[in-house]
Amino acid sequence: MSAHAAPGTPRLSGISAVFPAMNDGGTIASMIGTARAALRRAAADFEIIVVNNGSRDYTAAVLAELAGVMPELRVITHDQPLGYGGALRAGFSAAVKEWIFYTDGDAQYNPLELGLLADCATEGVDVVNGYKITRQDPWYRTVLGRLYHYTARFLFGFRLRDVDCDFRLFRRTLLATIPLTSTTGTIGLEIVKRFQDAGCRFTEVPVSHHYRRYGDSQFFRPLRLFRMAKNLAALWIQLVLHKGRS
Figure: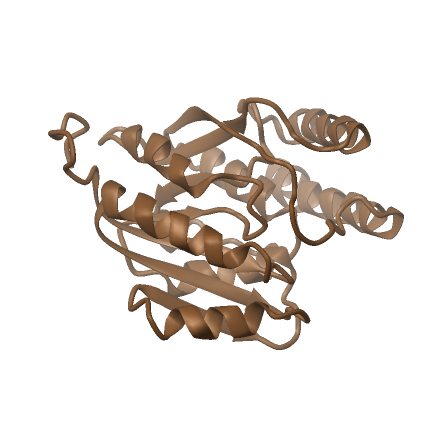
């Protein structure tokens, strides 16, 4: 669809919005409602896919209530967590529209800004990648986040401003020839690295980042950080070292 569509005209023909949710009962309803409003303006056709990734709070009850009144909503439930990457891949596999948008269910990104990404999804673009204007996290998370960014950028040769911003829009057809394998939080790095190596055309858009209002992040705990380092090393071996030897 033309990037110069008349005001009020949907930018894209179809978008599948994918939200992984794990113990996000306090935010997932507002995320879905806001995403629905944004999708109505951004796409002629859309669907919302929420992957309930082993939640132990009331996420399942909220999703069941919403699914009963929103025909665009599909809920994929897994009683045992698949990992962040596993949940995203489950959502991607279920998607059927031309474009796939994804972000987290914890409301640290504003789904209304999907319109900013859709505006940039022109004929010559394959991936629209958000980057955080300012990271709204405690100082130690900001420091660790920047360390993660620069480490990943050095190891994998990324050219993006923000490799760990989980606010992305990409063409679904890319997944037919570019397989994803990560089951952990490193899937964002895998997406960018594999798409970049395949010659996909990127553009970047500044997006807002907000404080987490509900639940606790597990990412910055010592055991999780250790596992993240191991997963990062394994991904580097798979995508950089082995590729260099092939």
